[in-house]
Image 1 (cartoon, rainbow, N blue to C red):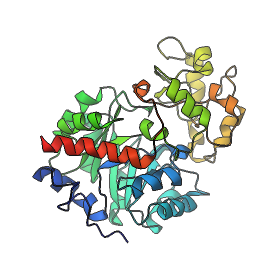
Image 2 (image 1 turned 135 degrees about the vertical axis):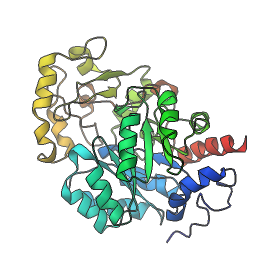
Image 3 (image 1 turned 180 degrees about the vertical axis):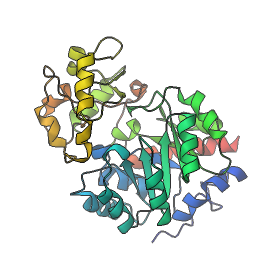
Image 4 (image 1 turned 90 degrees about the vertical axis):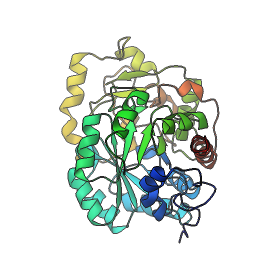
Length: 357
């Protein structure tokens, strides 16, 4: 069991610089045992037990990405085992979430859940009834207001510069203060381009109580991605917004360009209308087809079939040219691979620095 003595609501080194309003907003997370308001984003197969467990063990909020229902319970158990008694989180990607996913989360008594992409009113109500702390990631003021009205415990504000699937149309520095104005009691976390202590300091200066990052945690030994993916991120100097990797999930996403995008995307990232229609026509498969990475094994840059699946460990390296290389807009600022625990500590220092001023 975690004794909470170093939680963010206690008078410890990690919390003594927080203002009264910050402490109030973070109180529930502190009571759960979270020591640092640093969240690792849920990234399906990339954020497996090793990564989520390491982040939680370091005092942050490690988030297990959504996995197929056939392995979901096992993945939660493995994540908890690596978290060393600290609370874990799981991500429910709403277009792919099945009833069994929720049932397992409740049965396993997972303390924190993050929701993304869609109306989570039903899920919020069901999870909170069982004492789960529920975050929802949003990309607009309208979406944030709906989530607050639905009863969420916390908000994650995504800026358009974020990697992966992008809900936002505004940059984080613009959208974040607008969402912060909506609530004085709920914790508001910021997502999009947060890779270092100075980024954390900047966004908490705009009113955030915590930070959430995916790209920075991809470049860790613990992330469940192929080494070719890591190499592509380290070599990247730009990204594009596109609908290309949208078979079954035809929404906008940010990726590092590769041979597939060179073949099918225009300069602005757009794709032919017929290809977008093809992707959309298979949206019905999202809760029918198993969430298995092997779906990407047949992808080729020359063939217009591109699923949202990421290139994981054990897959063919050549697939890096035909699969989505999700990354934030400013990925070129990251030049190294660090253990997840070091990233948690660095981002936490940025937030302490802000509150000391």
